[in-house]
Length: 127
Image (tube, rainbow, N blue to C red; front, side, top):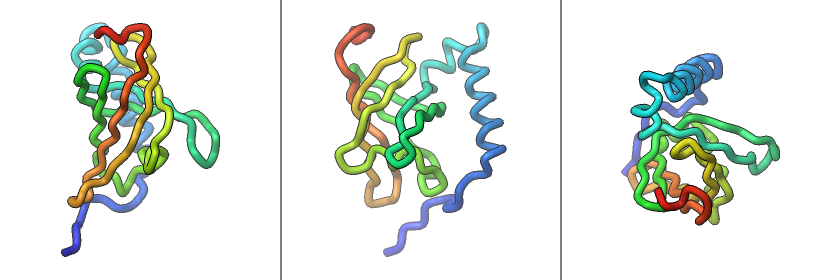
């Protein structure tokens, strides 16, 4: 049985940059920032091939020291592939502070991708 999962091409860079800029401005706004930050964060990671640092806004769910990021349109995005197999280090902006952790990406039988982050213990870990 073949699984068809949404958009399979790379997303247009200009459109992605405009959407990301809007999301980041919402997160930093005095009116909407607190509400938006409960579900959207910024992840920062180092590319496995390029060695460059990247930051991108993502939606997340948090339960204690575990953060789950559902990747929408995974075949059109590449950032999550940095965390396949044994995963790698990642930083997330949570509760107004940067938190580090270890991220592992998994694709299920239906083609959906989620990235699970186990936060490192330390400052801000009690939230």
